[in-house]
Image (cartoon, rainbow, N blue to C red; front, side, top):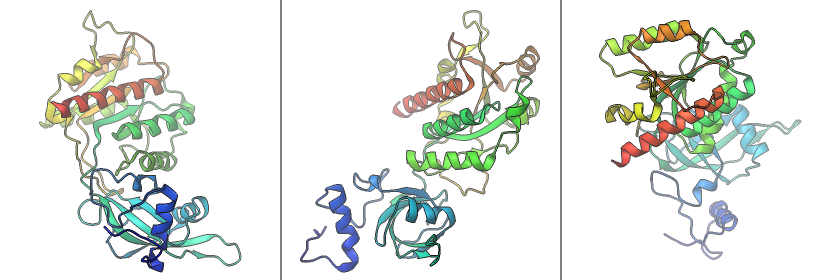
Length: 334
């Protein structure tokens, strides 16, 4: 690897010298190896999601909000490096190092309309995407709390999310479900947490609990491994009313727990393979007796406990996902 000094760097490499000065690194590779994570210097660069095909040496065009973010928010200049990733498989998928070209702006308003960037090298392949083998189903809650759950669930690695309509859901919360707004929240969480794939939204509108149970029961009856873990409060583990979530996961097949490990991402518009596990989180008022009786009639449902405390919906969601993440890590090490 050649060191850049004042006597041997070319004008087109000035951005690379500026990067070295910024991060205090004496060396910076123009072609970093395609490892599971970018190098120490590279991960400090801005990271964005671009649903486009990447080819090393070619130029991609960035428009709309992403162009505004790079040029006006991050204030990247011509030659500035940044990272971009997509949710695609095969060639052109994964995470790449890009170099900013001259942006195009409106002369009167000076707003950035279009940004062109050159693809320098690949940082991660599309197959280096690990997700938790679980879909999080929760009843609609207040908008701010729902954003918090989706953001943190994305950071923890959830594969898919969905909303379920239950008897004690407040009517006002059902009307507040906004797929576009919540997808933006999950996208920003992916950019921050080094993920390569945005969690799939299984339902654009809240699905009735009875319909969800029939869908998952059909998967099990067709020979596919599927298990709905219903998080229930006020259960007595000693009396056999429920199983601790940790125990239920440790007794599950290892193949199911590792099904999404190294799972290749798909395009944002495609429908990925559903995960083997589903986490059912009840509404603020809890589950009704009729709903519990309905779940007990389906063999795909397993009652689990998160402890003796009564948890809020957002707390229960993140606590359950943390247990899943720990079990998956434990399984990978054994």
